[in-house]
Length: 167
Length: 97
Image 1 (tube, chains in turn yellow, orange):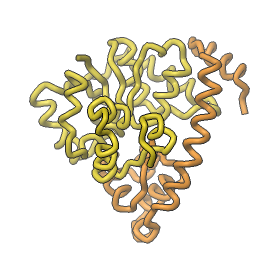
Image 2 (cartoon, helix red, strand yellow; image 1 turned 120 degrees about the horizontal axis):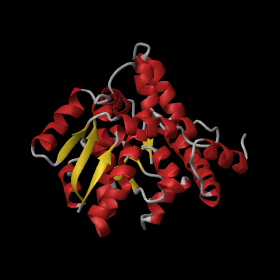
Image 3 (cartoon, one colour; image 1 turned 30 degrees about the horizontal axis):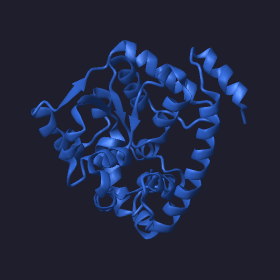
Image 4 (cartoon, helix red, strand yellow; image 1 turned 30 degrees about the vertical axis):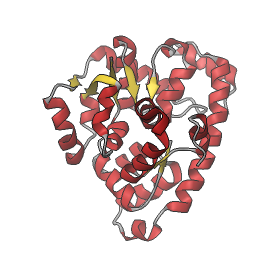
């Protein structure tokens, strides 16, 4: 099993999910950049604490090399045609590329940039629906329903169809 | 609006190489997704809850309905991301992935 680096939006949503612990069936550990932790409020930090205490999650300090690369990504994403990348998700991409981690994010920009930039083609970017699919397989429809109840997230019909769910 | 060639040139200036086919596919997908997402957000939102909130939270929630950008809305509200997400759930603003 591998390591994934998590962006704030993903963590905030996933930590609300009743079966959040099952993420460790997919990843051995979750890396949390300090820039991500800084965005989280009291609730998110409290929910994250047990993962950090049990060493299933660990913090990644701010490192100049990653920040320089993140800035390069942010500046490029300001091109009018692309979804804008924010510094924390750019930092996650930079870390993932350097360390061979997957990226967990519920934002569209990192996912699309990884598809568009050949330099990032080896970085796997996954969102909540991708993770639910990996965990639940044939029982995905029920899991999607529960996830929606817990988080208020909705998945697009087009994407659900690609996972064999007709909503 | 930039062309794919201009985006490729911009990428080159930043030291990146782009996959032009992936760019065209991504832009089409994004347009379709955003159209669907905007409709879902507009239909589900509890505007009464939003209008009862003080600014800048109210402005942030309005922006969230319009754009779906939780992080940008967080900056406008001036509160941590998970606190704004609590208000998002109360205001019944779905985030569409």
